[in-house]
Length: 135
Image 1 (spheres, rainbow, N blue to C red):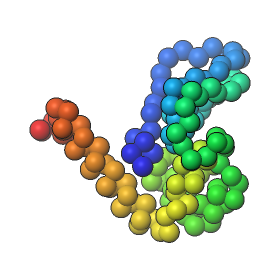
Image 2 (cartoon, helix red, strand yellow):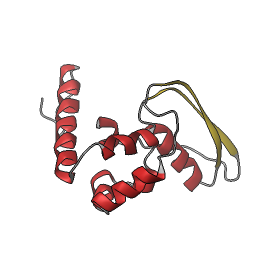
Image 3 (tube, rainbow, N blue to C red):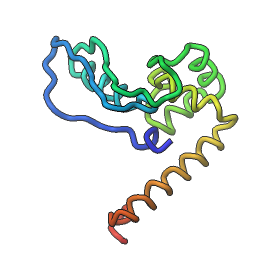
Image 4 (tube, one colour):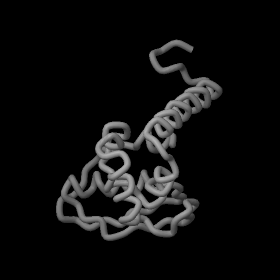
């Protein structure tokens, strides 16, 4: 859940019309690759494919099954987009499969709050300051 609430962002030059192949050492949920592909595509580049050395996610597929996307759409409508900042159709197979396991939006919100707290505690244990500047 931590990766889903703190989605990566990218910067740098993308050559419009150029082809790109994305390479990642390990993928769990696939969100980093999905965000990078989106960044390249909205910048005018073409993503030809991805290479992953280790897929640690449950699904071998990258794209979410349509039945999972329909279920999430029926169950949560636009609440998921408001919570995570991305449309349901942008979830990877592993992300969608994970979210399908929750029965209510409140369960997802509670898990997000727990993930945020775990992230802060992990950063504090490594000597980082609490968000807002206080230790």
